[in-house]
Image 1 (tube, rainbow, N blue to C red):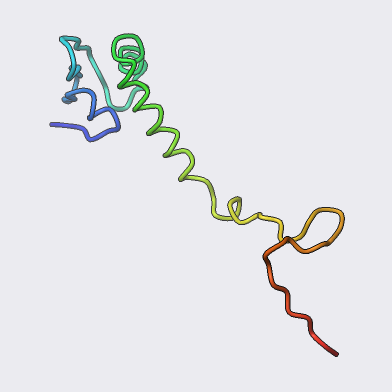
Image 2 (cartoon, rainbow, N blue to C red):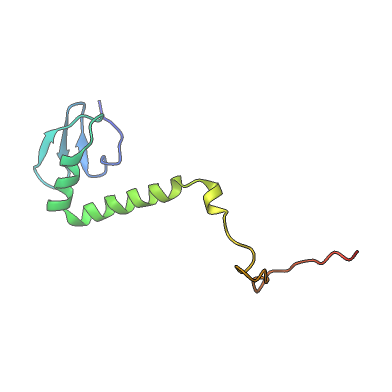
Length: 94
């Protein structure tokens, strides 16, 4: 039984253990537990792979952000109400 996780690129994961794909390291592993041992091994023995993992995690964190927080761009200059250059505003004559 193989668990599909973000660590599967770096470790061969079975139901109760994990083995490093880059060296002879193996350890007990439960998919429900926090994998500090796996992270620590990558960080200390395979720093290049650890950098790949952290970059992947950062990208996942950024993509989880809510759409409302991404749409909070100000359309006008603060405190002046002036238009941001490059935007067209139609004036309504009345």
